[in-house]
Image 1 (cartoon, one colour):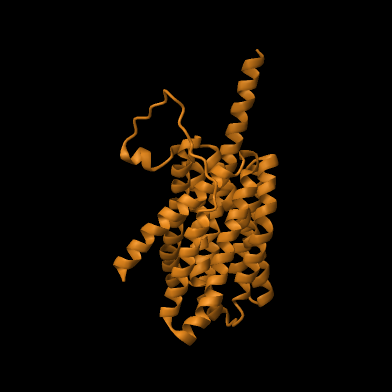
Image 2 (image 1 turned 45 degrees about the vertical axis):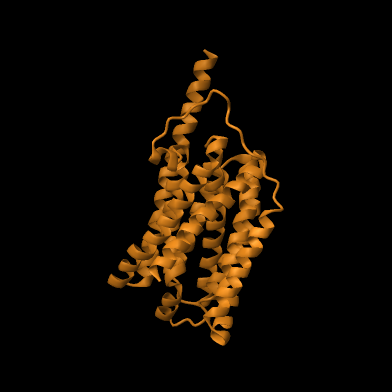
Length: 297
C-alpha cells in the first residue's frame, strides 16, 4: 500500500505542478490572479464533490468501483488535455543558466510566497483532518456544515479577489484574507454552537480563498517565464509540506490539550504570515520611495 501511495504521490506531484503551470502560461499576465482563482475553484469543487459521491458508492458497491471510476476520470482528463493549444516557450538566445540540481528544482523568486503558503497550509491541514473529531468534542453532529460554508466562501471569494489582485496588487487580497483566516480560526476555537461553527467557516473560507491563489499568482509573476514550472513546483511543495506538518504537529497539540486549543494555536500561523508579510510590504514601499527620490535628485 505504501509503495502504491508513493507512486500515486509522484504522479500527483507531476500533474498538479504541470496543470498549474499550463494555467499560468495560457492566462494573460494582467489577468493571472483571476485565472488562478478560477483554476483553484476547480480544485475545490473536485475535492468537495469527491467524498460526497465516493463514500455512498463505496458503501454500496465496494472500493473496486471507486478505482474504476477514478481511472475513467483520469483517462477523460488526458483526452481533454489534447484540446489545449499550448505554445512552446522559447528561451532568449544567448541566455545560459548554470544551475545545480537543487537550484534547478526550486525557483528562488517563488520562495517568499511559498513560505507564506506554508504558513496558511499548516492550519488548513488541521482543519481538514480533525474537524469531525472536533465535532465529537463539541457534541455537534452537523459539523459537516463547516465544509459547506468553507467551500461556498472559497467559490465566492476566489474570482473576486483574483480580479482585485490583478487591478490593485497582492496586498489587497493577502492582507484582508489573512485577517479573515485569523478571525475564522479564533471563532472555530471558541465555537459552542452550530451557528458559531458556520460563522467560523465563512470567515476562514473567505480568507483561504483570498490568500492561497493570490500567493500562487504572485509566485508566478515574480519568476521568469521559462521558470514558471519550477515556481509552481516550489509553491505547491510548500503547500503539501504545510498540510502534512499541520496534521502531525497540531494533532500532537490536540492530544496534549484539546481540539479547541489546537485551533486557537493554529491561528498563530496566519498571524505570523501577517507580521512577516506587512514588514516585507513596508520595506518594499520604503525602498521604492527611496529609489524614486534618488532618481529625482
